[in-house]
Length: 288
Image (tube, rainbow, N blue to C red; front, side):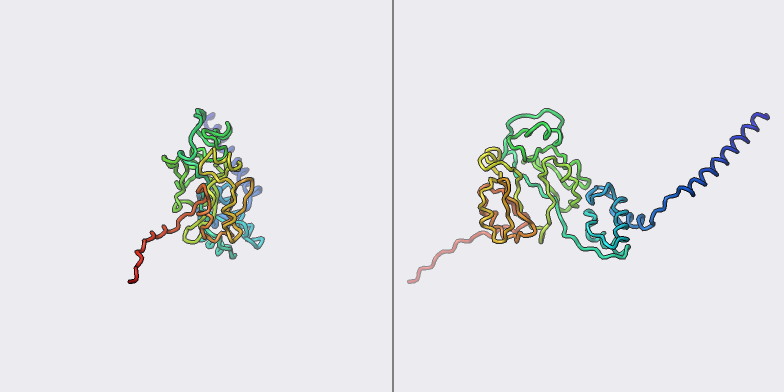
């Protein structure tokens, strides 16, 4: 019986000593955290998508508090929460924040199954990253979409799907938060974040093929061939050509769509514009 009592006393003493040591350590090595970080983190959507450039919402919250202490929130933004969330954060921190123009993910590849037929069959790991590492993929175009859906897997909001008919990713504008996860997931950088534009209207070159015209056209019938016709039509200097590939600057584009009509391969896309009104033929009147 004495052995049991001694064991209880010893264990109790060890517990008391351990508690004292832990209490002293917690006070001695305590790390102070600004309470505003938790408050800002509570305002953020909690997606932890990395679209802000930080590993998660906690990292962005910490950066926002530090930015407020430094007197500027420039360059810090939550793409998922958008302007509404950033305004709440700015009000909490007593700062002003510039409203950024909403963006959306854009797939810059028009090489559908019909325009870019398969020339071989890939039998390895079915991911875009793995297929890209082996070479051009299943088509002759070494720049276009591989269609394995790495972007679909990366999107946490269900905003991207693969069109079974074309084999290309399709972005749901209503669900897209412009977090940029799909941009990072694509090994060929065919997905770009662009300004949504007024009423969601955008004009962009749906191709990233940098081969010269004849080579690009042979690989894909819908490829940009760098002919320069779109650049000649643009009156606002919004189109530049580099490495036989046209690019439209969204900041300069005035959505006139003259470049769309000028493109011989239909590589330039105009999105969310109203359908042109049908031309009604008029019967000429003959004066007696």
